[in-house]
Image (cartoon, rainbow, N blue to C red):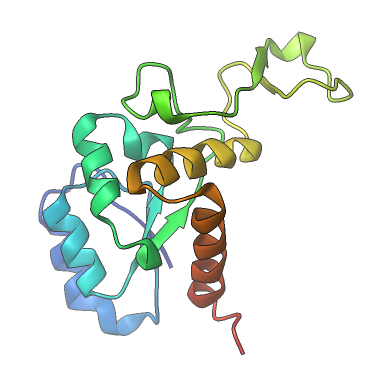
Length: 158
């Protein structure tokens, strides 16, 4: 189950706690909550989805650092939630994409390009780069653990 919580205060955690027995697992998508909320979500054995919106502020980045990597899912939430230059996480982005107006976008171009103002699945590499930098691990470790978490989340492990 994908769960979305935005500006819910304690209501979200209370409702999920009361109904946790009704679903086997889930991911709290596009997480922007506090460390306290993150701890409560992890205690309910749920995953936490991280994307560009999850790392806008210094406080957000501190929460991402604190999330146990085995409870983290990496996501883009395209076409929204990209990492913008104004985000606290932006200095950690290594992979840059050329942004072009929709009319000038050329899918055959050898440049790494995206349509201006639209987040794309390929930008997941940027989310991985930021998480790696915040946690002090390699991008490969983030990718491998995220893959393993995905297999667990969707019960795809023998």
